[in-house]
Every structure is written in structure tokens, then in C-alpha cells.
Image 1 (cartoon, rainbow, N blue to C red):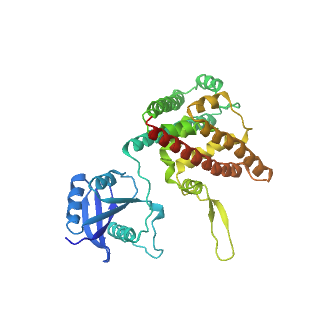
Image 2: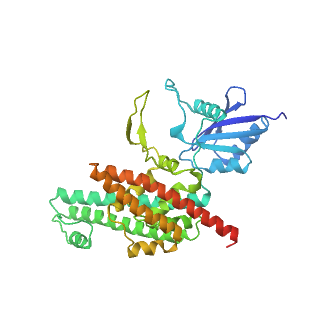
Image 3: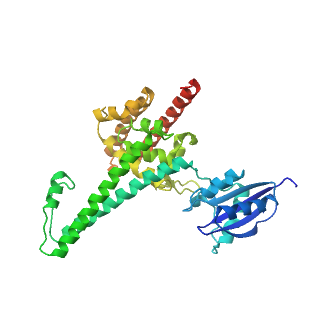
Length: 374
């Protein structure tokens, strides 16, 4: 067989896969639509290998996960999972079909115009799903609380102090309604909150148990040396970002999270706007939440020292430097008249730089331990 490379575009759905093929010099041609099962995919790949000696596949990241990617890699072929938001699209193209999408992916793959997403290994993906599950039930808890408060407000029940304290919970349990139906509604809302809180607590315990067997446990423990980053935030950062060595410099990490300024410049005019918000929303949310802690003066509290006891001296030095710099940054911006939310977002952007530095330091320490045979 003549040595040739085929570029294959896959438009993947839960039940079917549309396949298009383009050679190094020819135009894209439709191969057909196949059932999305491992057996059928294997037969389809074997059919394409009779046409080209080497194959390179591409498909958009989506809800079907990375099973297809792993199967193609196990068969010895290259595969790229493309970031959907970064796929080039022609403004005048108003027709979208599975066949056209597959052919477009094949052409763009040949031209090298696709941006690959990072594909985690199966265990890392499992940990990430566990972390996201905890976040989902935290949102359920928040919505249940809002619904209960809205229900009480409609019926003239006000609580003027801080909510969700022990005193507030005692006040909730003392509420009685004249109509039996209203009492049932109240009990269901309250039980929903308790159930969600128990589920969140259980998931957090399972996250802590999972940490010891995870390859990124040293990174998580290093991140916990920073102010405002506890177990949940650290595991969210590690599970969503993965190995930080894949980011060549801090700016790439900031851009990945969507914390860099948007820009629309032309000619001699430069216009910058708010942050792009085009990156990983899970990381962006938790890092902005943690950035609020840098409003306070730098200090090494008892709890912070306890969290950072497993980190190295070099990592703790980076975390202490972050405290001093980010506190100064926040108060400098607010003194210039910037809104607190804007200042915290700027602090979160710089905090990502310190997280990148901790990731690099942890990687170097792990490499040194591996070379020493520890």
C-alpha cells in the first residue's frame, strides 16, 4: 500500500457518528453514517486503514465524553478532541448538517486549524466527576434554601438576623402554619435542605478519602497552603486544570480560565473590555471566591498552618508571597476607585499566576523524588 495519511472528521452523537475523510491533497468526501458502538467503530476504522496507511481523527468535545478518543488511541491512531468554541466558522455559512460538520472537521484537521482540549486519564476524569457532583448538590442546596425563604416571605415570616446559623435553624423548626397544606409544603422544603446538606457533607468526605490515591494529591496539598483555598477548592482546581506543566507560562493559564481582558482593537485604536469568561467556569468561580480572602491583612492563622503542613517550605514561601502581593494589589485598586468586584477579579487573575508557580514547584519536587527513588 502506498504510504499516505488520511484525515478523518467525526460528528459524534449518542446513537450515530457521521464520518468524512480527506487525504493530504484531495477534497473531503463523505464516508457515511455509522452506529456509535465500539464494535461498529472498530470496523469503520479497519475499513479506512485499507485506504490510507495512517489515520488522524478529530471530533468536537461534547456530552459523549472521551470513550471514542481512548478507543482510537488504543487502536494506534492519532485523535484530537477539538474545543467547540475555537473551531473556525465562515460567517456566511448558514447550512449546518452532520455531514457538513464532519467534512469541515476533516479539512480543518488537515490544515492544523483545530485547538485540542486536554483529555484526562480515566481515574482523573472519575475524580473530576466526583468534584462536580459535589458542586451540583451544593447548587441544589442553594436553590432549596432560596425556595424556602421565598415561601416564608410570601406568608409574612421574616428573619432579620443572619440566616443559616444555629439560631436561624431553631427559628425554622419552630414555625407552625394554620393550614395543613402549608405545613406540608414547609416540611418538604426544610427536608430538601437537610437532605442536600447531608449529601454535600458525604461527598466532601468521599473527596477527602479519594485524595490519597490520586496522582495529583501533592498538587492539592500544595494549593491548600494558599489563603482561601481549602480541600474543595484545591481539588476543583486540580481536577479541572490537571497537570499545570502543560501551561508554558502563567498568562496561558489565566487565558484558559477566562480571566484576561477582552479586546477589540483596530489600527491605532485599542479597546479593552471586561474579562473574556471564555475559559473553565468551575475554576473561574472558585478562584474568584478565594480571592475575596485577600482583602484581609496577611497572616498565618492556625487553620492555614494546619492546611499547609504537608506542603514543602518552597511552596509555603510562594503562598506567603501571594498573601502580601495580592492584599496590596486589592487595596491599591480600591484606593483608585475601582469597585470591589473589579478589584477581586484582578486579584483572582494574579492568584492564578501563583497557582501556576506552585504547580511548577510541586512538579519539580515530584521529579526530584522520582529520580532519588523515593
